[in-house]
Length: 277
Image (cartoon, rainbow, N blue to C red):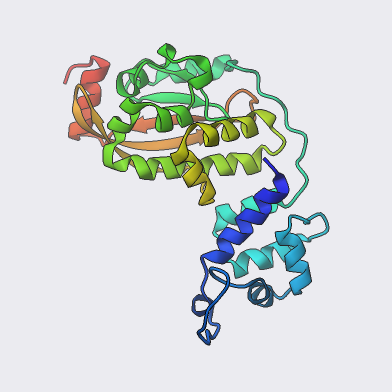
């Protein structure tokens, strides 16, 4: 993955989604050779020279100040996640500690096991699933049956048919959300060869992943709601929260899922957990 190309394609994708009329510019009609704003139009909006912006879009960002990046971000109407990503990919990557494969701190393992009515996963910075509790297996399937090299959320979403069936009509949204999160991780853990290799592998493995990656989504995973279609208990509405863990190289966060108290979905989770209903 070429870091200059990543910066270039990200800026071009955000420039392409803006039209002159979106930013208060007059459009005199006629054929436009580019989708969205031209470089000179974007530079004028950001208050920088065309040459300066062109160098940035070419990936030559070493001498660009934070103020200019903020100005370009404002002109492009980037949201908070996108602006943070722009700042990260415009800078040289800092040294990144390599994760210890499969190593989960004991305190985190104890925490995971304490969730008896909450499906819970420990996910790594490559979206690998490095820990899970009993109820997560009941809801999402037996992770231990998967080869370790394919035990990632990316593989589950893009290569496992049963996972697509679990999400059904919500699959596209979940897949896009996942790719956007991967791009946030790429910005956060720049220089992590394992993460870059995982993304490159998924682009080759799945045409759908490659399509979504090319669309340049950038968004941290926050609170979300999934409507799952479980083969045993039927429709299951779960509220997900990804809780970021302290800077442990082996794991990025704890992914927790809960049903609304008193709901049919909570009753279904109790059945799966083997609790009285």
